[in-house]
Length: 195
Image 1 (cartoon, rainbow, N blue to C red):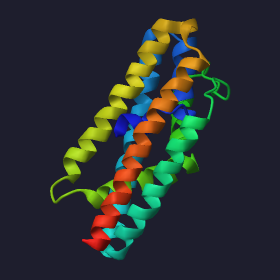
Image 2: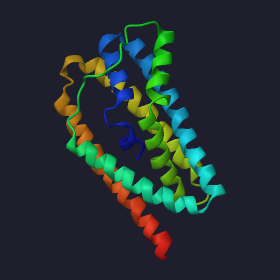
Image 3: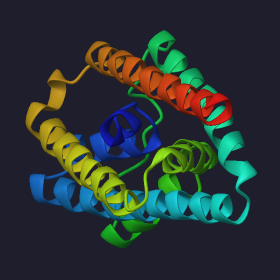
């Protein structure tokens, strides 16, 4: 689920790809590690924040499952229907301190990432059994580490061979996986309501 959540080509992915295409291997990897740090911090915050609210307000769990499931399916359908683009990346020819700040901006100041993260991760937290939080956190944090570093390495090594067609098919594959997870959330909600 973590990989399907990260793989669609958005601001973070474009930032990592553009950095890897325009910098040395070491600089590209350092940039991806900064993005991993910000991504994990946002993911854990979304997961734990939504979970704390659901613990305080048990009825919120049902709302999170319903809205989260519908939002996840909507995101998946959007990914299947949309052509990927390499346009819109950030200027990565800048000092490393500025890269840290830009990575923060494309992660933490991206309202879509905050909404999607809270709804998707919060909804999945609602379905976890007791003691399932830590394995789930380790799963999506390791997915972030693997995805962004793999993306930086592949982009740096493949260079000009990366095209929008390949990215579009990756988005479509991720869309199908995300739709399956959204459907699972709605089934969990139905099971919770109807027993």
